[in-house]
Image (cartoon, rainbow over all chains, first blue to last red; front, side, top):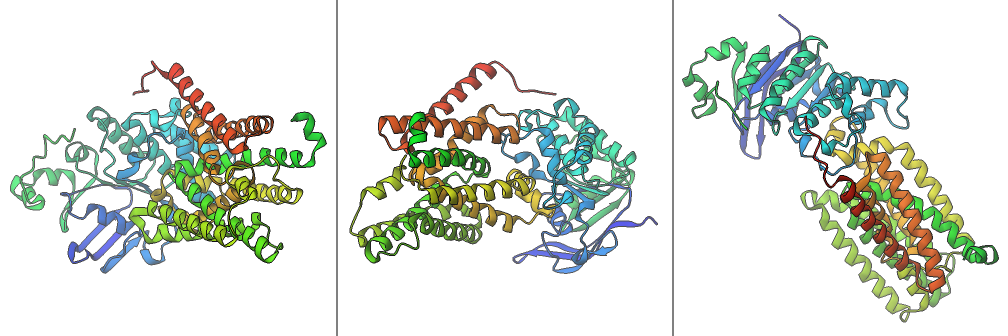
Length: 252
Length: 283
Protein backbone atom coordinates (compact mmCIF):
# COMPACT_ATOMS: atom_id res chain seq x y z
CA UNK A 1 0.00 0.00 0.00
CA UNK A 2 1.48 3.30 -1.09
CA UNK A 3 1.21 6.35 1.17
CA UNK A 4 -1.42 8.86 0.16
CA UNK A 5 -0.59 12.44 -0.77
CA UNK A 6 -4.30 13.27 -0.82
CA UNK A 7 -6.84 11.46 1.25
CA UNK A 8 -10.53 12.25 0.91
CA UNK A 9 -12.83 10.54 3.39
CA UNK A 10 -16.60 10.56 3.13
CA UNK A 11 -16.71 14.05 1.64
CA UNK A 12 -20.03 15.62 0.61
CA UNK A 13 -20.69 19.06 -0.77
CA UNK A 14 -23.81 21.01 -1.75
CA UNK A 15 -24.30 24.22 -3.71
CA UNK A 16 -27.46 25.68 -2.16
CA UNK A 17 -29.68 22.59 -2.14
CA UNK A 18 -28.00 20.82 -5.02
CA UNK A 19 -25.90 17.89 -3.93
CA UNK A 20 -22.71 17.90 -5.99
CA UNK A 21 -20.54 15.42 -4.13
CA UNK A 22 -22.05 12.56 -2.20
CA UNK A 23 -19.86 10.71 0.32
CA UNK A 24 -16.77 10.57 -1.84
CA UNK A 25 -13.84 8.45 -0.71
CA UNK A 26 -10.66 8.87 -2.67
CA UNK A 27 -6.94 8.38 -2.15
CA UNK A 28 -4.11 9.59 -4.33
CA UNK A 29 -0.86 7.73 -3.70
CA UNK A 30 2.53 9.45 -3.78
CA UNK A 31 4.15 9.32 -7.20
CA UNK A 32 1.01 8.49 -9.12
CA UNK A 33 -0.33 10.17 -12.24
CA UNK A 34 -4.02 10.26 -11.46
CA UNK A 35 -6.48 11.03 -14.20
CA UNK A 36 -9.82 12.22 -12.87
CA UNK A 37 -12.63 12.05 -15.39
CA UNK A 38 -16.38 12.46 -15.31
CA UNK A 39 -19.22 14.34 -16.97
CA UNK A 40 -19.74 18.10 -16.76
CA UNK A 41 -21.41 18.99 -13.50
CA UNK A 42 -20.14 15.74 -12.03
CA UNK A 43 -18.24 17.60 -9.32
CA UNK A 44 -14.67 17.47 -10.67
CA UNK A 45 -14.00 21.18 -10.38
CA UNK A 46 -15.76 21.30 -7.02
CA UNK A 47 -13.47 18.55 -5.78
CA UNK A 48 -10.43 20.56 -6.90
CA UNK A 49 -11.73 23.62 -5.08
CA UNK A 50 -12.15 21.56 -1.94
CA UNK A 51 -8.58 20.31 -2.29
CA UNK A 52 -7.27 23.84 -2.69
CA UNK A 53 -9.20 25.00 0.36
CA UNK A 54 -11.38 27.38 -1.63
CA UNK A 55 -14.48 25.49 -0.52
CA UNK A 56 -15.14 23.61 2.70
CA UNK A 57 -16.80 20.19 2.68
CA UNK A 58 -20.22 19.85 4.30
CA UNK A 59 -19.24 16.49 5.75
CA UNK A 60 -16.11 14.38 5.72
CA UNK A 61 -12.41 15.14 6.00
CA UNK A 62 -9.66 15.96 3.53
CA UNK A 63 -6.02 15.32 4.33
CA UNK A 64 -3.14 16.75 2.32
CA UNK A 65 0.28 15.26 3.04
CA UNK A 66 -1.28 13.48 6.02
CA UNK A 67 -2.36 16.80 7.55
CA UNK A 68 -6.05 17.74 7.87
CA UNK A 69 -6.70 20.51 5.34
CA UNK A 70 -7.88 22.89 8.08
CA UNK A 71 -4.37 22.81 9.56
CA UNK A 72 -2.48 22.56 6.29
CA UNK A 73 -0.06 25.43 5.72
CA UNK A 74 2.41 24.14 3.15
CA UNK A 75 0.57 25.37 0.06
CA UNK A 76 3.86 25.76 -1.77
CA UNK A 77 4.03 21.99 -2.06
CA UNK A 78 0.99 22.09 -4.31
CA UNK A 79 1.11 23.50 -7.82
CA UNK A 80 -2.12 24.32 -9.60
CA UNK A 81 -2.80 24.88 -13.28
CA UNK A 82 -6.34 26.07 -13.69
CA UNK A 83 -8.79 25.63 -16.49
CA UNK A 84 -8.91 29.40 -16.68
CA UNK A 85 -5.13 29.79 -16.94
CA UNK A 86 -5.33 30.46 -20.65
CA UNK A 87 -8.32 32.76 -20.42
CA UNK A 88 -6.01 35.53 -19.21
CA UNK A 89 -6.01 38.83 -21.04
CA UNK A 90 -3.97 38.16 -24.19
CA UNK A 91 -2.79 41.76 -24.36
CA UNK A 92 -1.31 41.65 -20.88
CA UNK A 93 2.31 42.57 -21.50
CA UNK A 94 4.22 39.93 -19.58
CA UNK A 95 7.14 37.89 -20.87
CA UNK A 96 7.37 34.15 -20.32
CA UNK A 97 10.07 34.86 -17.73
CA UNK A 98 7.80 37.26 -15.86
CA UNK A 99 4.85 34.87 -15.91
CA UNK A 100 6.94 32.01 -14.57
CA UNK A 101 8.42 34.29 -11.89
CA UNK A 102 4.92 34.71 -10.46
CA UNK A 103 5.07 31.11 -9.30
CA UNK A 104 7.78 32.14 -6.85
CA UNK A 105 6.10 35.28 -5.53
CA UNK A 106 4.57 33.83 -2.42
CA UNK A 107 7.43 31.41 -1.78
CA UNK A 108 10.00 34.20 -1.76
CA UNK A 109 7.73 36.13 0.58
CA UNK A 110 6.94 39.73 1.35
CA UNK A 111 9.61 42.44 1.42
CA UNK A 112 12.11 40.26 -0.44
CA UNK A 113 13.39 40.49 -3.98
CA UNK A 114 14.24 37.79 -6.50
CA UNK A 115 17.93 36.93 -6.29
CA UNK A 116 20.19 35.10 -8.77
CA UNK A 117 19.18 31.74 -7.34
CA UNK A 118 15.50 32.46 -7.91
CA UNK A 119 16.21 33.64 -11.44
CA UNK A 120 18.14 30.45 -12.18
CA UNK A 121 15.20 28.49 -10.83
CA UNK A 122 12.85 30.35 -13.17
CA UNK A 123 15.07 29.59 -16.17
CA UNK A 124 15.25 25.96 -15.14
CA UNK A 125 11.46 25.67 -15.04
CA UNK A 126 11.22 27.28 -18.47
CA UNK A 127 13.79 24.79 -19.79
CA UNK A 128 11.91 21.90 -18.26
CA UNK A 129 8.78 22.66 -20.30
CA UNK A 130 10.86 23.30 -23.43
CA UNK A 131 10.16 27.00 -23.78
CA UNK A 132 13.68 28.41 -23.51
CA UNK A 133 13.71 30.15 -26.87
CA UNK A 134 10.57 32.09 -25.89
CA UNK A 135 11.85 33.30 -22.52
CA UNK A 136 11.53 36.99 -23.41
CA UNK A 137 8.52 36.70 -25.69
CA UNK A 138 5.21 38.20 -24.56
CA UNK A 139 2.93 35.41 -23.41
CA UNK A 140 0.06 36.72 -25.52
CA UNK A 141 2.04 36.03 -28.72
CA UNK A 142 2.32 32.30 -28.05
CA UNK A 143 -0.02 29.52 -29.14
CA UNK A 144 -2.47 27.94 -26.70
CA UNK A 145 -0.28 24.89 -26.19
CA UNK A 146 2.81 26.99 -25.54
CA UNK A 147 0.92 29.17 -23.08
CA UNK A 148 -0.20 26.10 -21.19
CA UNK A 149 3.43 24.96 -20.95
CA UNK A 150 4.34 28.33 -19.50
CA UNK A 151 1.62 27.99 -16.88
CA UNK A 152 2.95 24.56 -15.99
CA UNK A 153 6.39 26.12 -15.59
CA UNK A 154 4.86 28.75 -13.32
CA UNK A 155 3.53 25.93 -11.11
CA UNK A 156 6.79 23.97 -11.23
CA UNK A 157 9.07 26.81 -10.27
CA UNK A 158 8.20 26.51 -6.59
CA UNK A 159 9.17 22.79 -6.57
CA UNK A 160 5.76 21.31 -5.84
CA UNK A 161 5.41 17.69 -4.75
CA UNK A 162 1.88 17.60 -6.12
CA UNK A 163 0.65 19.24 -9.29
CA UNK A 164 -3.09 19.64 -9.85
CA UNK A 165 -4.23 20.39 -13.40
CA UNK A 166 -7.83 21.30 -14.18
CA UNK A 167 -8.70 20.71 -17.86
CA UNK A 168 -5.28 21.88 -19.04
CA UNK A 169 -5.74 20.71 -22.62
CA UNK A 170 -8.77 22.89 -23.37
CA UNK A 171 -7.78 25.15 -26.26
CA UNK A 172 -4.69 23.10 -27.12
CA UNK A 173 -4.72 21.60 -30.62
CA UNK A 174 -4.72 17.82 -30.83
CA UNK A 175 -1.18 17.60 -32.19
CA UNK A 176 0.15 19.39 -29.14
CA UNK A 177 -2.00 17.45 -26.70
CA UNK A 178 0.27 14.47 -27.28
CA UNK A 179 3.40 16.54 -26.56
CA UNK A 180 1.67 17.94 -23.51
CA UNK A 181 1.05 14.48 -22.07
CA UNK A 182 4.64 13.50 -22.75
CA UNK A 183 5.73 16.51 -20.72
CA UNK A 184 3.46 15.45 -17.86
CA UNK A 185 4.72 11.88 -18.12
CA UNK A 186 8.32 13.13 -17.77
CA UNK A 187 7.45 15.32 -14.80
CA UNK A 188 5.85 12.32 -13.16
CA UNK A 189 8.57 9.78 -13.93
CA UNK A 190 11.73 11.86 -13.88
CA UNK A 191 10.93 14.65 -11.43
CA UNK A 192 8.81 12.40 -9.24
CA UNK A 193 5.94 14.85 -9.10
CA UNK A 194 2.55 13.43 -8.21
CA UNK A 195 -0.04 14.55 -10.73
CA UNK A 196 -3.78 14.96 -10.45
CA UNK A 197 -5.19 15.70 -13.86
CA UNK A 198 -8.85 16.56 -14.38
CA UNK A 199 -9.84 16.11 -17.99
CA UNK A 200 -12.41 15.26 -20.59
CA UNK A 201 -9.70 13.93 -22.83
CA UNK A 202 -9.97 10.29 -21.81
CA UNK A 203 -8.46 8.99 -25.04
CA UNK A 204 -4.90 10.27 -24.75
CA UNK A 205 -4.92 10.43 -20.99
CA UNK A 206 -5.33 6.67 -20.50
CA UNK A 207 -2.05 6.11 -22.34
CA UNK A 208 -0.09 8.06 -19.73
CA UNK A 209 -1.94 7.97 -16.41
CA UNK A 210 -1.01 5.41 -13.79
CA UNK A 211 -4.40 5.59 -12.07
CA UNK A 212 -7.85 6.61 -13.23
CA UNK A 213 -10.80 7.78 -11.19
CA UNK A 214 -14.23 8.50 -12.51
CA UNK A 215 -16.40 10.97 -10.64
CA UNK A 216 -20.07 11.74 -11.00
CA UNK A 217 -21.39 12.82 -7.62
CA UNK A 218 -19.76 9.73 -6.16
CA UNK A 219 -16.64 7.90 -7.18
CA UNK A 220 -17.71 5.33 -9.77
CA UNK A 221 -14.39 3.86 -10.66
CA UNK A 222 -10.90 3.96 -9.25
CA UNK A 223 -8.21 1.76 -10.67
CA UNK A 224 -5.63 1.18 -13.39
CA UNK A 225 -6.11 2.41 -16.95
CA UNK A 226 -6.19 -1.18 -18.18
CA UNK A 227 -9.11 -1.97 -15.93
CA UNK A 228 -10.86 1.18 -17.02
CA UNK A 229 -10.57 0.25 -20.66
CA UNK A 230 -12.10 -3.12 -19.84
CA UNK A 231 -15.24 -1.49 -18.48
CA UNK A 232 -18.17 -2.18 -20.72
CA UNK A 233 -19.82 0.65 -22.60
CA UNK A 234 -22.89 0.12 -20.49
CA UNK A 235 -20.98 0.68 -17.25
CA UNK A 236 -19.39 3.84 -18.58
CA UNK A 237 -22.71 5.13 -19.81
CA UNK A 238 -24.04 4.69 -16.29
CA UNK A 239 -21.33 6.97 -14.97
CA UNK A 240 -21.82 9.62 -17.59
CA UNK A 241 -25.58 9.24 -17.73
CA UNK A 242 -25.39 8.98 -21.51
CA UNK A 243 -23.48 6.89 -24.03
CA UNK A 244 -19.84 7.92 -24.54
CA UNK A 245 -17.13 6.64 -26.75
CA UNK A 246 -13.76 6.09 -25.16
CA UNK A 247 -11.54 5.59 -28.12
CA UNK A 248 -12.64 8.20 -30.62
CA UNK A 249 -12.71 11.08 -28.23
CA UNK A 250 -11.97 14.38 -29.87
CA UNK A 251 -12.78 17.76 -28.44
CA UNK A 252 -11.24 19.81 -31.15
CA UNK B 1 10.38 78.92 -19.33
CA UNK B 2 13.81 77.43 -18.76
CA UNK B 3 15.29 80.87 -18.10
CA UNK B 4 12.27 81.89 -16.06
CA UNK B 5 12.70 78.73 -14.04
CA UNK B 6 15.60 80.20 -12.14
CA UNK B 7 13.89 83.50 -11.67
CA UNK B 8 10.51 82.47 -10.32
CA UNK B 9 10.21 80.12 -7.36
CA UNK B 10 6.68 79.12 -8.24
CA UNK B 11 7.80 77.95 -11.67
CA UNK B 12 10.59 75.91 -10.18
CA UNK B 13 8.15 74.28 -7.75
CA UNK B 14 5.78 73.49 -10.59
CA UNK B 15 8.52 72.06 -12.76
CA UNK B 16 9.98 69.85 -10.02
CA UNK B 17 6.50 68.68 -9.03
CA UNK B 18 5.86 67.92 -12.69
CA UNK B 19 8.93 65.68 -12.78
CA UNK B 20 7.65 63.81 -9.73
CA UNK B 21 4.11 63.23 -10.93
CA UNK B 22 5.47 62.28 -14.37
CA UNK B 23 7.00 59.31 -12.54
CA UNK B 24 4.39 58.30 -9.98
CA UNK B 25 1.20 58.74 -12.02
CA UNK B 26 2.22 56.36 -14.87
CA UNK B 27 3.93 54.05 -12.35
CA UNK B 28 0.64 53.39 -10.57
CA UNK B 29 -1.17 53.71 -13.88
CA UNK B 30 0.57 50.57 -15.15
CA UNK B 31 -1.14 48.47 -12.51
CA UNK B 32 -4.41 50.39 -12.80
CA UNK B 33 -4.65 49.78 -16.54
CA UNK B 34 -3.83 46.06 -16.46
CA UNK B 35 -6.29 45.56 -13.63
CA UNK B 36 -8.94 47.34 -15.74
CA UNK B 37 -9.46 50.02 -13.13
CA UNK B 38 -8.82 53.00 -15.41
CA UNK B 39 -12.10 54.62 -14.46
CA UNK B 40 -11.40 54.34 -10.77
CA UNK B 41 -8.76 57.03 -11.11
CA UNK B 42 -11.46 59.26 -12.58
CA UNK B 43 -13.89 58.50 -9.78
CA UNK B 44 -11.24 59.24 -7.17
CA UNK B 45 -10.27 62.52 -8.77
CA UNK B 46 -13.86 63.70 -8.46
CA UNK B 47 -13.88 62.73 -4.80
CA UNK B 48 -10.68 64.72 -4.44
CA UNK B 49 -12.50 67.68 -5.98
CA UNK B 50 -15.13 67.36 -3.24
CA UNK B 51 -12.34 67.49 -0.68
CA UNK B 52 -10.77 70.51 -2.33
CA UNK B 53 -14.15 72.28 -2.49
CA UNK B 54 -14.59 71.48 1.18
CA UNK B 55 -11.18 73.00 1.97
CA UNK B 56 -11.93 76.12 -0.07
CA UNK B 57 -15.31 76.41 1.63
CA UNK B 58 -13.72 76.27 5.09
CA UNK B 59 -11.12 78.84 4.02
CA UNK B 60 -13.65 81.23 2.59
CA UNK B 61 -16.45 80.98 5.12
CA UNK B 62 -14.59 80.37 8.36
CA UNK B 63 -11.10 81.63 7.46
CA UNK B 64 -9.94 78.18 8.56
CA UNK B 65 -6.53 77.71 7.03
CA UNK B 66 -5.13 74.79 8.99
CA UNK B 67 -6.40 72.39 6.35
CA UNK B 68 -5.22 73.58 2.93
CA UNK B 69 -7.31 72.26 0.00
CA UNK B 70 -4.49 69.89 -1.04
CA UNK B 71 -4.80 68.04 2.26
CA UNK B 72 -8.58 68.05 2.47
CA UNK B 73 -8.55 66.73 -1.10
CA UNK B 74 -6.16 63.98 -0.07
CA UNK B 75 -8.27 63.06 2.94
CA UNK B 76 -11.42 62.78 0.82
CA UNK B 77 -9.57 60.84 -1.85
CA UNK B 78 -8.18 58.30 0.61
CA UNK B 79 -11.58 57.86 2.27
CA UNK B 80 -13.15 57.49 -1.17
CA UNK B 81 -10.58 54.86 -2.14
CA UNK B 82 -11.29 52.79 0.96
CA UNK B 83 -15.00 53.08 0.22
CA UNK B 84 -14.42 51.89 -3.37
CA UNK B 85 -12.59 48.78 -2.14
CA UNK B 86 -15.49 48.07 0.24
CA UNK B 87 -18.06 48.53 -2.54
CA UNK B 88 -16.07 46.24 -4.83
CA UNK B 89 -16.33 43.62 -2.11
CA UNK B 90 -20.10 44.14 -1.77
CA UNK B 91 -20.84 43.93 -5.51
CA UNK B 92 -18.47 41.10 -6.35
CA UNK B 93 -19.71 40.35 -9.84
CA UNK B 94 -20.45 44.00 -10.74
CA UNK B 95 -17.32 45.64 -9.41
CA UNK B 96 -17.49 48.58 -11.81
CA UNK B 97 -20.67 49.73 -10.08
CA UNK B 98 -18.41 51.26 -7.43
CA UNK B 99 -17.22 53.80 -10.01
CA UNK B 100 -20.49 55.67 -10.77
CA UNK B 101 -21.39 55.59 -7.07
CA UNK B 102 -18.15 57.23 -6.02
CA UNK B 103 -17.95 59.53 -9.04
CA UNK B 104 -21.43 60.94 -8.67
CA UNK B 105 -21.00 61.14 -4.92
CA UNK B 106 -17.84 63.18 -5.44
CA UNK B 107 -19.43 65.56 -7.92
CA UNK B 108 -22.54 65.89 -5.75
CA UNK B 109 -20.53 66.84 -2.68
CA UNK B 110 -18.37 69.21 -4.73
CA UNK B 111 -21.42 71.09 -6.00
CA UNK B 112 -22.79 71.41 -2.47
CA UNK B 113 -19.52 72.80 -1.07
CA UNK B 114 -19.06 75.12 -4.06
CA UNK B 115 -22.58 76.48 -3.60
CA UNK B 116 -22.10 76.88 0.16
CA UNK B 117 -18.89 78.78 -0.55
CA UNK B 118 -20.91 81.09 -2.84
CA UNK B 119 -19.78 79.82 -6.16
CA UNK B 120 -16.81 79.37 -8.41
CA UNK B 121 -13.64 81.34 -8.26
CA UNK B 122 -10.47 81.20 -10.31
CA UNK B 123 -8.76 79.00 -7.75
CA UNK B 124 -11.32 76.28 -8.38
CA UNK B 125 -10.63 76.59 -12.12
CA UNK B 126 -6.98 75.85 -11.36
CA UNK B 127 -7.99 72.70 -9.58
CA UNK B 128 -10.16 71.56 -12.47
CA UNK B 129 -7.64 71.96 -15.29
CA UNK B 130 -4.31 72.39 -13.54
CA UNK B 131 -2.06 75.39 -13.31
CA UNK B 132 1.57 76.29 -13.87
CA UNK B 133 1.58 78.69 -10.95
CA UNK B 134 -0.35 76.94 -8.23
CA UNK B 135 2.37 74.86 -6.59
CA UNK B 136 3.76 76.31 -3.38
CA UNK B 137 6.99 75.26 -1.70
CA UNK B 138 4.92 73.42 0.90
CA UNK B 139 2.93 71.59 -1.78
CA UNK B 140 6.16 70.55 -3.46
CA UNK B 141 7.58 69.11 -0.26
CA UNK B 142 4.38 67.15 0.49
CA UNK B 143 4.32 65.79 -3.06
CA UNK B 144 8.00 64.87 -2.79
CA UNK B 145 7.27 62.90 0.37
CA UNK B 146 4.30 61.17 -1.28
CA UNK B 147 6.45 60.28 -4.29
CA UNK B 148 9.16 58.72 -2.15
CA UNK B 149 6.62 56.68 -0.20
CA UNK B 150 4.85 55.57 -3.40
CA UNK B 151 8.04 54.49 -5.17
CA UNK B 152 9.30 52.61 -2.10
CA UNK B 153 6.02 50.77 -1.54
CA UNK B 154 5.70 49.83 -5.21
CA UNK B 155 9.26 48.48 -5.19
CA UNK B 156 8.60 46.47 -2.05
CA UNK B 157 5.33 45.00 -3.28
CA UNK B 158 6.17 44.86 -6.97
CA UNK B 159 6.09 41.09 -7.31
CA UNK B 160 2.87 40.73 -5.34
CA UNK B 161 1.14 43.53 -7.26
CA UNK B 162 2.29 42.10 -10.56
CA UNK B 163 1.18 38.58 -9.65
CA UNK B 164 -2.21 39.81 -8.46
CA UNK B 165 -2.73 41.91 -11.57
CA UNK B 166 -2.06 39.02 -13.92
CA UNK B 167 -4.15 36.33 -12.32
CA UNK B 168 -5.83 37.15 -9.06
CA UNK B 169 -7.25 33.66 -8.50
CA UNK B 170 -3.87 32.02 -8.91
CA UNK B 171 -2.27 34.61 -6.67
CA UNK B 172 -4.82 34.01 -3.91
CA UNK B 173 -4.45 30.25 -4.15
CA UNK B 174 -0.69 30.58 -3.84
CA UNK B 175 -1.17 32.46 -0.58
CA UNK B 176 -0.84 36.14 -1.46
CA UNK B 177 -2.99 38.38 0.71
CA UNK B 178 -5.01 40.06 -2.00
CA UNK B 179 -7.26 42.24 0.15
CA UNK B 180 -4.74 44.25 2.17
CA UNK B 181 -2.53 44.68 -0.89
CA UNK B 182 -5.42 46.00 -2.98
CA UNK B 183 -6.34 48.38 -0.19
CA UNK B 184 -2.77 49.62 0.14
CA UNK B 185 -2.58 50.12 -3.61
CA UNK B 186 -5.81 52.07 -3.90
CA UNK B 187 -4.83 54.33 -1.00
CA UNK B 188 -1.56 55.04 -2.85
CA UNK B 189 -3.61 55.81 -5.96
CA UNK B 190 -5.70 58.27 -3.98
CA UNK B 191 -2.57 60.03 -2.74
CA UNK B 192 -1.04 60.22 -6.21
CA UNK B 193 -4.25 61.65 -7.65
CA UNK B 194 -4.42 64.31 -4.97
CA UNK B 195 -0.75 65.12 -5.59
CA UNK B 196 -1.17 65.35 -9.37
CA UNK B 197 -4.25 67.55 -9.32
CA UNK B 198 -2.30 70.76 -8.78
CA UNK B 199 -0.70 70.34 -12.18
CA UNK B 200 -3.02 68.32 -14.40
CA UNK B 201 -6.32 69.13 -12.72
CA UNK B 202 -9.21 67.01 -11.49
CA UNK B 203 -10.72 66.37 -14.89
CA UNK B 204 -7.52 65.18 -16.55
CA UNK B 205 -5.55 63.45 -13.83
CA UNK B 206 -6.71 59.98 -14.88
CA UNK B 207 -5.38 60.68 -18.37
CA UNK B 208 -1.85 61.05 -17.01
CA UNK B 209 -2.25 57.67 -15.29
CA UNK B 210 -3.65 55.80 -18.26
CA UNK B 211 -2.59 57.37 -21.59
CA UNK B 212 1.17 56.78 -21.23
CA UNK B 213 0.41 53.18 -20.26
CA UNK B 214 -1.92 52.72 -23.22
CA UNK B 215 0.87 53.97 -25.49
CA UNK B 216 3.62 51.77 -24.04
CA UNK B 217 1.41 48.69 -23.86
CA UNK B 218 1.41 48.63 -27.66
CA UNK B 219 5.15 48.37 -28.03
CA UNK B 220 6.62 47.03 -24.79
CA UNK B 221 7.94 43.53 -24.29
CA UNK B 222 7.08 42.49 -20.81
CA UNK B 223 5.63 44.28 -17.83
CA UNK B 224 8.74 45.96 -16.47
CA UNK B 225 9.57 47.42 -19.85
CA UNK B 226 6.02 48.73 -20.11
CA UNK B 227 6.35 50.35 -16.71
CA UNK B 228 9.57 52.20 -17.55
CA UNK B 229 8.31 53.18 -20.98
CA UNK B 230 5.11 54.55 -19.42
CA UNK B 231 7.15 56.68 -17.05
CA UNK B 232 9.25 57.97 -19.94
CA UNK B 233 6.11 58.86 -21.92
CA UNK B 234 4.50 60.45 -18.87
CA UNK B 235 7.61 62.52 -18.24
CA UNK B 236 7.75 63.73 -21.86
CA UNK B 237 4.06 64.67 -21.76
CA UNK B 238 4.38 66.58 -18.50
CA UNK B 239 7.49 68.49 -19.58
CA UNK B 240 6.24 69.48 -23.03
CA UNK B 241 2.79 70.14 -21.61
CA UNK B 242 4.05 72.40 -18.82
CA UNK B 243 6.40 74.41 -21.04
CA UNK B 244 3.88 74.91 -23.83
CA UNK B 245 1.12 75.62 -21.33
CA UNK B 246 3.27 78.32 -19.77
CA UNK B 247 4.12 80.04 -23.05
CA UNK B 248 0.66 79.71 -24.58
CA UNK B 249 -1.04 80.67 -21.32
CA UNK B 250 -3.14 77.51 -21.32
CA UNK B 251 -3.88 75.36 -18.26
CA UNK B 252 -1.23 72.58 -18.42
CA UNK B 253 -3.82 69.83 -17.97
CA UNK B 254 -4.96 70.42 -21.53
CA UNK B 255 -1.51 70.51 -23.10
CA UNK B 256 -0.29 67.46 -21.13
CA UNK B 257 -3.24 65.40 -22.30
CA UNK B 258 -2.84 66.48 -25.92
CA UNK B 259 0.86 65.55 -25.87
CA UNK B 260 -0.05 62.19 -24.31
CA UNK B 261 -2.53 61.52 -27.08
CA UNK B 262 0.06 62.41 -29.74
CA UNK B 263 2.49 59.94 -28.11
CA UNK B 264 -0.26 57.33 -28.10
CA UNK B 265 -0.98 57.85 -31.80
CA UNK B 266 2.72 57.63 -32.66
CA UNK B 267 3.09 54.40 -30.69
CA UNK B 268 0.10 52.86 -32.45
CA UNK B 269 1.48 53.72 -35.87
CA UNK B 270 4.97 52.46 -34.94
CA UNK B 271 3.42 49.16 -33.97
CA UNK B 272 1.61 49.05 -37.32
CA UNK B 273 4.77 49.68 -39.29
CA UNK B 274 7.00 47.37 -37.26
CA UNK B 275 4.64 44.48 -36.79
CA UNK B 276 2.20 44.99 -39.62
CA UNK B 277 3.30 41.95 -41.56
CA UNK B 278 4.58 39.85 -38.73
CA UNK B 279 2.49 36.78 -38.00
CA UNK B 280 1.95 35.36 -34.56
CA UNK B 281 4.76 33.19 -33.25
CA UNK B 282 3.57 29.64 -33.55
CA UNK B 283 4.94 26.29 -32.54
